[in-house]
Image (cartoon, rainbow over all chains, first blue to last red):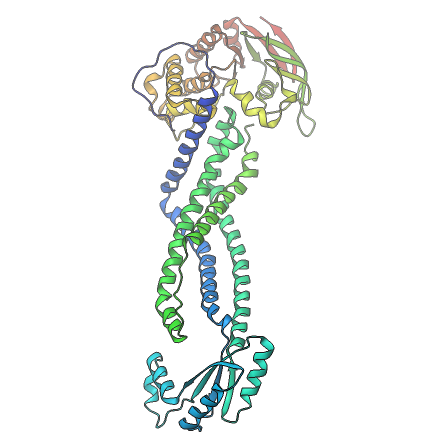
Amino acid sequence: MAIKPQEKVAPRGAQKHRVGHLDRSRGWFRHHIEVALQALVRLTVTPVATLMTLAVLAIALALPGFLFTVVNNIQQFSIGWDTNPRIMLYLNTEVEDARAEQLSLELMLHGGLSGVELIDRDQGLREFSSYSEFAGMLSLLDSNPLPAVILVLPADHQAAALQQLQAELQSIPEVSEAVLDLEWIQRLNAYLLMAERFSWVLSGLLALAVLLVVGNTIRMTLESRRDEILVAKLVGATDAWVRRPFLYSGFWYGLIGSLFAFVLVQVSLYLITGPANQLAQLYSSNFVLQGLDLTSGLILIATGTGLGVLGGFLSTGRHLRAIEPS
Amino acid sequence: MAAIRFSNVGKRYEGGFDALTGVDFTLESGEMAFLTGHSGAGKSTLLKLIMLMERASRGQVQVGDQDLNSLSRRNIPQHRRRIGVVFQNHHLLFDRTVFDNVALPLQIAGYDPSDAARRVRAALDKVGLLMREKQNPIALSSGEQQRVGIARAIVNKPAVLLADEPTGNLDPELSEGVMRLFEQFNRIGTTVLIASHDISLIERMRRRTLVLRGGRLVADGY
């Protein structure tokens, strides 16, 4: 197995031997490295089966990684609004530009508002044209269908005050609808909370899948190495010694699988970067899509590796005890 | 000092079958003895008790100064490292070379590789197979395979060497050679206990012989 035959001829005859403590710990360390490498080599003996197992593991690990990243991104995206609630006043379409202008000036004098911005119908059309793929259709219409919008920033950010302000602005005759952005944010946050919870549940299920896949794969190799285990136990192998190669197999499955998963997440995110940034621009946000950062990446890989080892541990426990020389 | 001591040992298997009943004997350190009897007389069971592949249902088995009843499952590997065993079907692994087969007990015990290599060669030299170290055991004759099994059993320099029908598959000439090997190991101080039903071979060896019949020790002498 590991000990390389050497060419020099050994001295003959019996010698008393004791394995010293230092020797033992060095041997232990060397044994671990050897077993780890052998386990890795063993994976390459059946490349197709190994790759398929790794692909399943990678997908199972990538899904939660991807979900958490998306949730994280949306949370980050929404942070801007939490501190600055806004109310959008959509004016009736028949309101003249001049009247809209005047209304915005009147609102500036309103004590409850800290800022007012008018987006008149022409400006709205220009912005719409530059961002929307439907811009071409607008030219088919005789007149501009968009209403003028007055964006106001409330001074008081308390929920009750905001609602009262919204009702007050809604009652202005020219205003067709007063929309409090905060409602949308609150809903978004509720959705996010749900998405996060869902991600955890899904992660738990997928972690279980990883355990089962690794466990099952290792149990099959365990059966194929039955003779070796029996002989090793007969000549004095401990349970730990017999179990070690299988734990390292689990380790490699987990590590390589999660590395693949990491790549999968990054590639998927790269694919949606373009549209996501465009979306952010629409909201005039300086949001940039975040991939898995170093910490999250390490967590993903550590979790994957840990699950691999645990899978190896669980699948060998009872079975190894059952394989006893008789 | 006693190498192996059985005191009123009984082994009852599930279902009530008594494989051994009231077995008493002592094998002194450095002694060589045969264990004989018809198949089913309890020879293998007796060896399994020494190896702790089975536990005695009654009485006490002692190996060296260790009472096996008080040995926990955790300590069985250490116990087995002190005993070399040769099997009739030799239990060699065909996925590795002769050298690696013999090296297995040393790897398990954590020997330094160069030290282990020296010991493996010394053991293979003793059984006359040094030239075969790089071959797969499947390419060897059954006599040679048995000798590889013996090399593996003695590579760790065990105090006690057990053999279960070591000549079962061999012709008389090869059997004689294997027995001479056991005598050699005995001469350097190893306690040897050989289970065999080859009466003529045992008679020629002129050693102490324990005879089992129906799980009872019915004769013990030369």
